[in-house]
Length: 384
Image 1: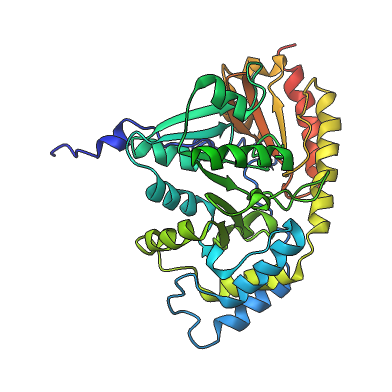
Image 2 (image 1 turned 90 degrees about the vertical axis):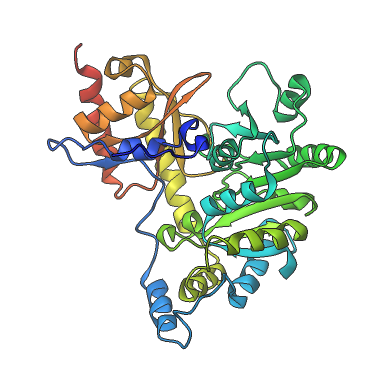
């Protein structure tokens, strides 16, 4: 059998992610699975959403190509964005998408050439950075945990990077930190002066606990893009529905790029998104996640686990305690061990400041926290 010569870009870039690595590990049959892994809440979509989808599935043209055109959803998001983010959008500033991941891929195809300088933050959901590397861009990573730089702009100045594109992820997954209006204002002034394109993955913008959601687009649209999703806000992870908003010039070109890859989400799903945007009340799940976060933090401290303080998202992020290092040499090996031996699923992160685990507060049942408490005690006492 002759050797297949895959494209060089796929051979020199490792595209495997932590989620796939964790999925390949089987949980222990001796314990009930406690899934604090991927942020996917299967309990927040109610029967009215399914009724909405079923009704629209029976309408004429329901199974036709949508090309991500749905006037109801566009109109609903305009109202939603004005009410929740204080951002006034026009049709030319908006485009429906099939989720954040493909949108970040399309943006990289549109904006990145070989040797383009791209800046991303880490840790984060760095799809844009990975695809930029595939396209042979020069990708710089600003570490959110560091003692050397005051903030992102300080990093740019000290390292003399001069990026063409800056890709952000605020509110940040996994750290649970948000950007402030002051930061966005300073960053926008820098971007305008140096003709830099700003992209913000705002998947978790609606889970802001201390303040109202802060949008990058509050600083204007020129050279800016912000991406939203129904996956986190409304629990529609499998429907692949979202919105991209910002500079009309980028939106126009992006629609041409998108057309090369997909023909749009099924219209009944877009109409369900519209329905949920109009319903416009996620206060119940916001309260649930924040309560669970505080309960998790109180349990964790009993086992010398210091959980990162959050002002957004639904994740508890923590540095691996010393006693847990007996299970592996890094975050990935420890996370795999916890799943295979104790059926506890966390997502691992290796950073320049240490090894971390992330726990999602979208787990199935509140009783899971009590079971976690018991499981952590067993883990800690092993080998003592």
